[in-house]
Length: 335
Image (cartoon, rainbow, N blue to C red; front, side, top):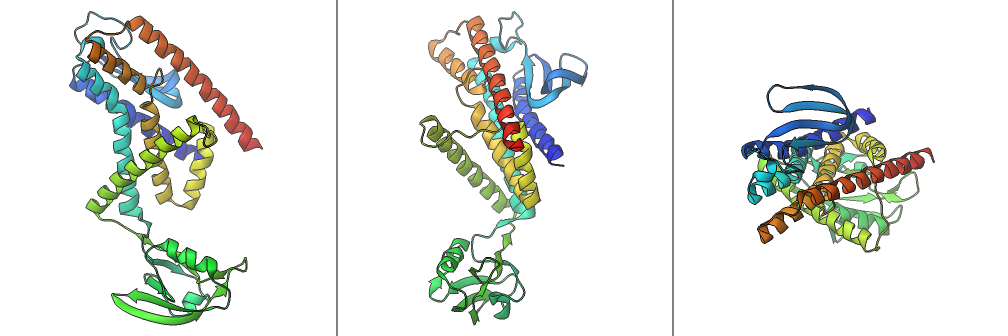
């Protein structure tokens, strides 16, 4: 099932990315020869007219093949003969769709599955532990432990790290809008640490709340990924990468935790794909955007044969990197 989940997520991310290119290309009347999901040998294809739709063997990418994308063409509908703004829009649409899709993934997670509560909402109460003995129930909201105000779940964790087994604690909480207090004695968990015996609750957002949280979460993770990339490039942190094999392991871990976390992870992967494609690396969308911006400034295109060769070399290097990463993933799993 982990492999199935991974394939579904990978194919979905590639599909929306390439659909972004495809849809905006069609809106700008660009001649599209093929819309492909996957790389390598063709499994099957369909479609009549100018555009063929195909599924290929390796689910590690996809492409939209447009006339005049990497070569000169006399066709007035060729990509190379469209205006710079039109080509910029077609190129940027792929990564943009990944960010939109991330927002949708986060929205679904927050709206249908919920997310960890930002306050002291209690999800479950363990029988026989301190909270249960004090009469605290699922759905109650902790507001204070002794004189410590509880604003987030982190406040509870910080209090418990300093607490001791057997310690008397006054617990203040709300139930149905009513403020209640209770005295309880902290009990021990299996590791001998002091606990209340509660777990964090889950809050579900409404439509507008989930949209807002989806956008904010997407922005936050985008900034986090850019910061992490900069730290890796400058040597501040170790370089960590994972390929499709490594993804299977990660997807399995998130699926074991719950479907909500699998949706959140899919959203993070979608952001990752969008960010990586915007990097100015040959063969990626970011490099093509740089060439188009230079063309717009110069009012003269760069030699297309040289640009095509640069993208080809970049593609070969990316595929080589993918093989190396996959080998490292397999070695890591075996060890």
